[in-house]
Length: 305
Image 1 (cartoon, rainbow, N blue to C red):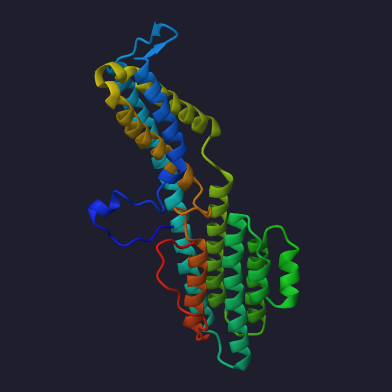
Image 2 (image 1 turned 90 degrees about the vertical axis):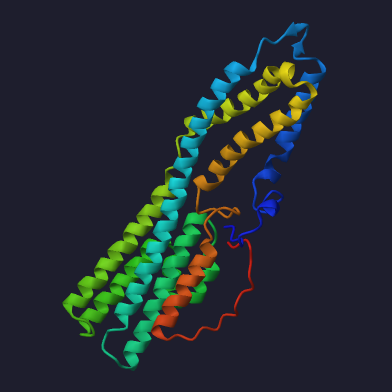
């Protein structure tokens, strides 16, 4: 995710890091060469003058812009829903940590609280790794006891397994008389919220936008960009290649941004910073229950993951 201080409007024109432009440069250069060839031959292909003018391209471009706007809105909805789910995960984790602190005091209870907080942290990191398809071995080893670690690593859906362990710990505390039925019911409500968050994230990651729609839009954008030089060559002459590249950059960049934010849990520059959010959730619940923070503060970064 890009975290950048508000910059001067002129500097923003030359921002490179975090922009989709680096990925588009080869395509734009290819279109520039194609446009120069069209200008050189005056829009003629094998002695046939392509009969295009700006009027139909203007109408076609307007319709295409509407479709691109719809695609970007759909992709941003998925991105924002993912962010809201992780915001709810932070709130629910804090609520569980606060509730577990209200149990009966005692040395045994302190051990229970620390173990409970470790399980919540393990759930957060397991969810992050499941969404990104990365290896969770190192993070699970840091936060789980050997028996729980073996059980979690042997399971396919690790967050679900950890959630079951949290429920078992609450049931054990109820049986030992360290919480009453009302406290258990309220904590079960927050466990239900964790389950809803997990299901919401899995829904986003397992249900992309319809592939046929993406293919149609992709083809239409590039066909339109290939037609532009023939429609503008007579009116713009040798200035046409620059105008074509600028228009193509606008359309292709919108499509590239939509592709990037469609999967908000990835590791690209404009995806959600799951690593930082996971660490922040762990730090805040540990601080809430009084576990010392031994992490070193990180320097300011413009791009966080």
